[in-house]
Image (cartoon, rainbow, N blue to C red):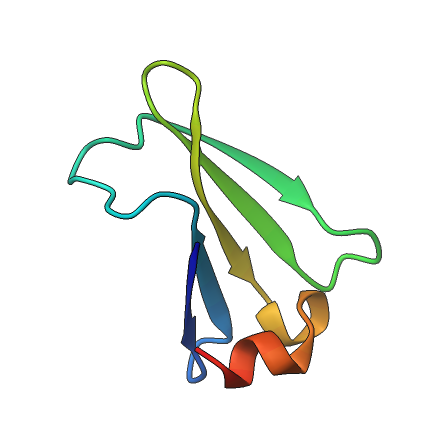
Length: 70
């Protein structure tokens, strides 16, 4: 697992696999975090496996120590 944090845009991407090839994420499901402070975008491959999670509004949804460690 790897976390990349873009402080300027307050987005984080949590990769669940070592490498996601271009075009590998063929389906995205959006989930609103309770309270509406953030959104999660779940990326799935053609077989339905979860590849990663984009967190929009990361400061509201993730612990600060995760964002500082990226």
